[in-house]
Length: 317
Image 1 (cartoon, one colour):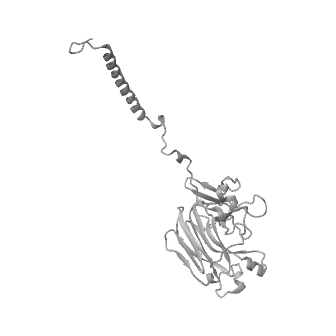
Image 2 (tube, rainbow, N blue to C red):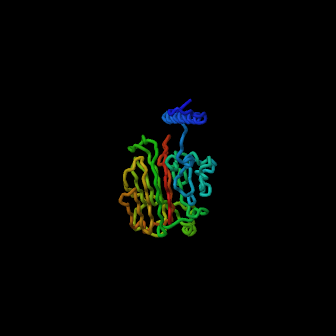
Image 3 (spheres, rainbow, N blue to C red):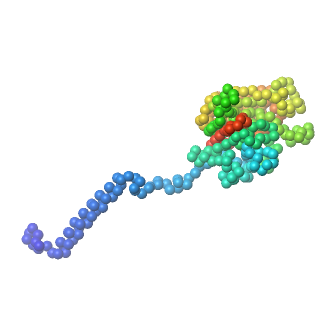
């Protein structure tokens, strides 16, 4: 074999050129196969995860249970009262592994919420209605340790009504439920002075969901001249509810705040103008208080139920 100049090509140079030619062809073929593979249906190719850690990244509702106990709508231990679970049984995700709690208070990790489900079943001594509801304990070891309006407090939450049964026995479309409260309680001192057998007091504030509207029910004196020990009467002959419609939320998430201070209450729905109560009834309010939040269904009808979600809940004093 000779080159263009008529000189022979040595075998080594010939083999080198031939190998280079075939290597080039091989690279082109491999590149073509790779491009065709990448253009096929994604289900045929490898799955790429930008951040493998995201697969196990679960976010829960922003609620610290250190100062909350929960009341359920059932009496599984047959002691005649609704079942309750204390803060030490709820903190650090304890409620997630408790099979008795799970049917009524459980996580929804799709939107980082806790759902409270209830229906008519077991009730507390002073109520006809059932609840799945948190009760504030400023001292987790002593439920009789509570706070006065002078000491004050603030509760904020983000929540929504998920589902509720229809009401065929009234003019309302749906049954109603209480989602937040300030509840009154007779102090240990007044219990000792008067020898009361019960420390139950009236709820100072009840925040209702009614047919998509948020309503405030606030306790006020029937007779503003009432004074002294007569103020400790918890009946409707002494205390009644004044009611205010705070606005429509439907089945959408909303923010709510209850701020209590000396002879003053301030309530705010979303960014609306706050509703403020300042009156003689608050000046004379003789009870201590605790916050409540959850799902307190106002119906005993067969088949009634309600589901309320909380995304955030915080209390400070």
